[in-house]
Length: 575
Image (cartoon, rainbow, N blue to C red; front, side, top):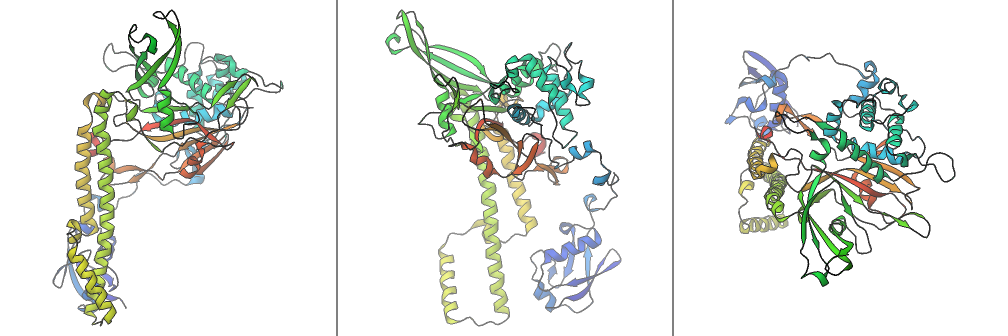
């Protein structure tokens, strides 16, 4: 059908617009927004029989409209509808420095050059770098005495010419240098610092040519140990103790019970104690197929010690429950073990599946479970509500379109065939027998639906915020729901810890997008993709690639997982 030229009069001005009978009222209102700057929800366009709406039948409107007919529109634009000149002069890629390009949104991050069997270190550093809180605290870290004499050399990438005992200072400098380039960077200064502090990483290969391959889990643990000892942040209150990044964000607490052997059960008491942990071990044997099973096995261990009651060595059973969950949870697959017959670390190749979202409530103390369960269940309710609303909206749109098509056929005088009539009669009977659909009975425009959805979800987020335990809410570095999302993986390919190759995977941070309903008008939107760091080669992969790291052969298998507590709404988000 051909369009009809019409004139829309607004605030003394006339705008020429083409009325398309096959279009929608929503499209016409969007056209008027582009001409007048008045947002669709603030427009009032008078037409025959009422006002123009998103779902107005444009075919009927066109049938009663003459060419160049004048329509009156009222309404004024809000501040957000006004076009303003950009506050910053546009910059083109060719005008940006290398550092500016590296810091731009969506830029490919820098890889790390392999300096001779250093893939274990490169992979570890990339996953550690994925924690923004650590990066932030590193910027304020001051070199320890005698540890910063290579800082000037580090600015030129020449830190490897000497050695420094300040591993944390070297880490800070390395991450700063990596943030200013997209090329593969040589981590010479940090490698020398690691070998100075921990000489085992300077071990030569068996052939005597170059350095030996090392275990990434050992590198991870030693670097975390150094960060724990050195990276402190002074408390806000007067006299407050210094807070460490590791203690705050990566360290959890266990409640343990040491049970005596059965023969001494009546003579010895169960010894209860508390202890910190920096990682959970996933033990692997022939019965383990899933991470949850391995974690459960890792929280129960047999310890041989002397029993005074029996006067001999006996096996004690130690069971542990988590009493504090850190924001970042490290999980270690215990795949390497020492084989005496070949005098080297062998690898357990068994396939062990791990989830993208991890629920750890079953490993927690009863007290912590009581605090976490209301939040976890509310999170799942909010997700379900949002999913149900999306499905209901799709069904409603389909039903509305079918009804509009039926009305259109009736208006055009289409005679249904006998079979079609029978089918329609059957559908009407089924529809009558079905329970009423609530929101499906009344069609809503997209604007009305979004407003209703936002109001519903806002109340749900308020309820979720209220469900958080006050003590947990005050602990900035704790997990408050018991749910974690996977953010980083260190993987190993090969049959032995002394050989093979390490790579790492880090989930991409969401990019900032405009959202008038979000705090500050911006929100993060993730695409679900991951960065794959293979030394200095960096590429983008889908979740399916991560899912293949469960093991089961000489293909790469996960060694270390880094989970982060899921995001929960804050008071600022809701307001």
